Image 1 (cartoon, rainbow, N blue to C red):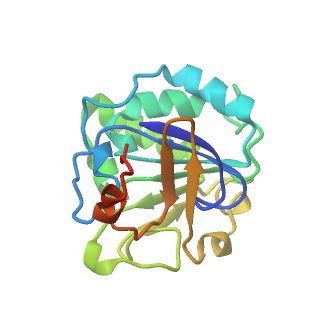
Image 2 (cartoon, rainbow, N blue to C red; image 1 turned 135 degrees about the vertical axis):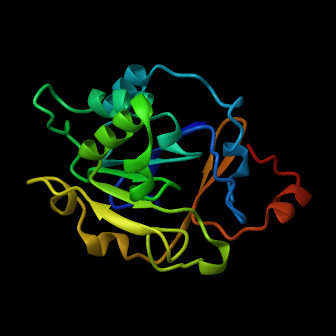
Length: 205
């Protein structure tokens, strides 16, 4: 759906954020329902995206959606592309954060090739934030949308909590506005009314 560099509100450090296109969850109150459509967005080769990320040299990467685990084979290809042949993460001191509407239990229950790829992705993600957004459980003091969402840190030496201190995701939520040539992109945890934006002539992409 979109790639944004130099974000400070989607995790610790100067992060590059990737939003995948397509989501089956359709959570009530989602700020980004444009990401639900499986026919929209731009099709990119996962390896090409990995090269773009490495060239951008961010402190870390945050992957959101849409639903990244709806296309786990592509997600796995991308994640492998930012690791070396010994499965070491390449030059990302603040690691990889990934949001998913699936619970980790549901990921382990996904069938077939998709399930195998989804579970393999977990070995490459420093922090998985799982669970659907629940509007009635909305929070504003952590790197999550609602209190039912859980933090799963990768349990490997030099990864997980060694990359991302748990205190770094206990944050006062903030919003960024990035101005592009033909668009304005709002990211973080906005509570801005979509109708308010539209009334002022802002087109939501």
